[in-house]
Amino acid sequence: MLRLYGTELASRLLLGTARYPSPAVLTEAIRAARAEVVTVSLRREGAGERAGQGFWSIIRALGVRVLPNTAGCHTVKEAVTTAHMAREVFATPWVKLEVIGEDDTLQPDVFALTEAARILCAEGFEVFPYTTEDLVVADRLLAAGCRVLMPWGAPIGSGRGLNNLFALTALRAHFPTVPLIIDAGLGVPSHAARALELGFDAVLVNTAIAQATDPVAMAAAFAQAVAAGHAARLAGPIEPRDFAAPSTPVVGQAFRG
Amino acid sequence: MRILVNGVWRETAGRELAAALEELGYGSRLVSTAVNGEFVSLEERARTALADGDRLEVLAPMQGG
Image (cartoon, rainbow over all chains, first blue to last red; front, side):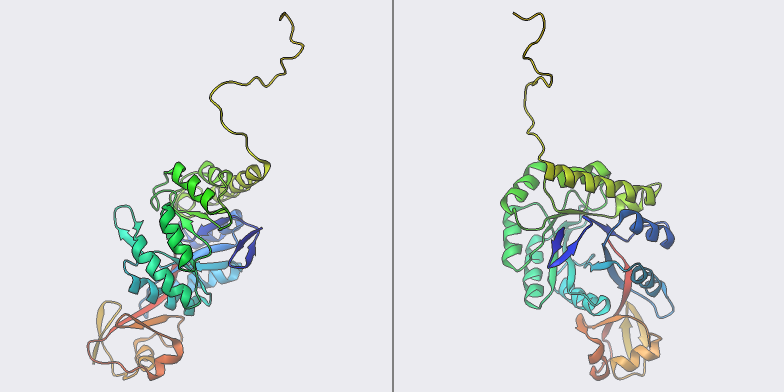
């Protein structure tokens, strides 16, 4: 079981809820992914609009746990205020903390992120920081009180997979007991399988599923890949080697000696 | 008075945030609020006075990644 801030989860695939072609497809994709945690957000809503209330009704009816994000925040102040607003609306101490530092890559501002994490952890939030693969930043986030880390695989929505395998592997090795969730940048199910094979505890996927030609089928494919990757990790993969090693026994081989 | 609601100037007679939200049509809605960048909780709304030129954010649940 995956344990995040004391909550046990059977599913290691967390799902974003944005950019689906329709609410009906979103609903079916959440079911097909067998997701137990979905990310949600807060946005300005005019008094005449009902989109937000409708969306929230759909999510509540599914009975899934929500992880509110602070997407779009660029400062500590914005992120902390948004976290407070999300906690009230969604009634959860969980927050996926995003503080964006650069608009082309949507790379986290890890300095502001660490400061916002320190403030929110002290206020009783259970913080899921969206961070880079940087070891020192990870260490600072843990010192700030985070008990889960969400390193990026690649820039949000890029579909490039695990961009920096060396650093991600080092991160996993340095923090063997901290739940690590690859958040952002995955494009296809094999990326998710790879993350789980490397020992990451879970993945969070949005665009790769929501923008697929058939999001529901892609959600099911990601669920299978995550399950396969995790099973493979537990089964103990072999180490890659530089030369061939015969798989058929060489003892008793004909025509030799 | 004039206050900036989600980036748009609006006229409101409501002196407190709760009354202004009612007047602006957010009455029973599931929203969260901030005034001048500071979170104002549901229970604080009735006693949070607004002033001319205040910036009000009214946020509702939305899809997110």
